[in-house]
Image (cartoon, rainbow, N blue to C red; front, side, top):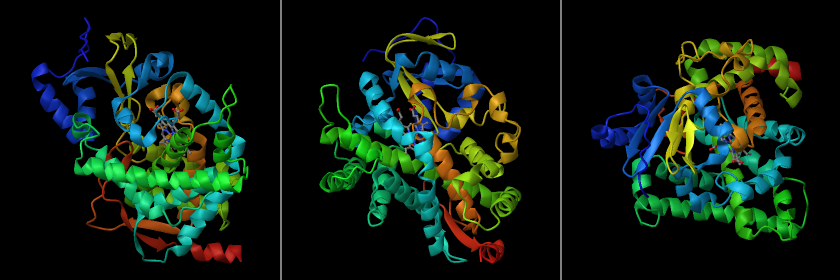
Length: 457
Ligand code: HEM
């Protein structure tokens, strides 16, 4: 591909430092990207080999990419590198085909439908903490992954994955590891049998097997349970034809993965932040104890659990599970007053914007209180965008917010989690932002549990 060089370029590192910049970026994007904004401003450009990228960090410019000019962009190169995994599912497909599939899946995510998943969410959370004993040391991230996996499988596919949870966890680790080294990822073709590529290919085959089992079981039973899988199986084209097995697989695997990995990360980071911020934790516990008075939380409690909601919102500000998003211009377009030629990349990073002091006071501090008094309404629309925006906004937004709130309430009501000293908690920016070595935590039964059972009895 040629390298378009427009007449008017925004600032950016000098050409001599591009190679070093790319190395620094791919080595540690979380440390590197905020520096770009600080040094050069809200739109910065650089060339990586034969690819020009624009880092866009002003909320108004992000809106131009995701909303105003969304039709002039397609998904970025990293996601397209994962074609074997996601195929033509909702996350990666484009144009009319994407729109048709989105409309098809949408009913499974309508508010009323999502509300019906609440009891299952709480049930699985209760089952998980039922296994916990005071003083246990656990990999909290693995526990959150298992929990959200069970929930997405049950609610959207009416399937049990208890036996496969560990396998899915390992498969995702291999895929996320492959996607965490951008330099290697962009420079190494997928077909090259490197150890990482091989591990990721095996992982994808394992996940395929699980998804094909869901499809096969449903076909055999012939049941229409009204869930997402039934909707996909029943879907017909204008000419009356059904989705191919491949297409079913692509849609199902996309939602299966996107629907649990992100929420598990949101919760894992929340436990870390609560453990590091005991005053916030105490306030959370006080709210849970007063609103729930020992009862199991339900959907109706969520409007009254305002601080609990703010804890999740603030956690996703500091540790956005989708930490950055990428697009490629499919035609010439102007963003932030600069021409972006067809074929160039655009990078939008929640990680950077969510920590920008122009929008958030003391941005590095974990302060759920900042969300009191409708801060969201006062901010520019894209100063906080954990779920993206525009037509490609996360389809599972309501599902995730409800799930995170209910699981946090159900677990924090009974346990607090303390980080195990000496275990490194390191954010790994991959397709999502996950803790590279997991999060080791000691679970401590809360004294108030006594109160809970007294009330419950
Ligand atoms: C805290 C949890 C979650 C976060 C932070 C999150 C974040 C995101 C973001 C930022 C996007 C847009 C990506 C882009 O435009 O390039 C997205 C898309 C998507 N998400 Fe989520 N997500 C979460 C939970 C979920 C859940 C629970 C599901 C399904 C059950 C889901 C399914 C999807 C799908 C299918 C897409 C592609 C939508 C489309 O392009 O039409 N996500 N998500």
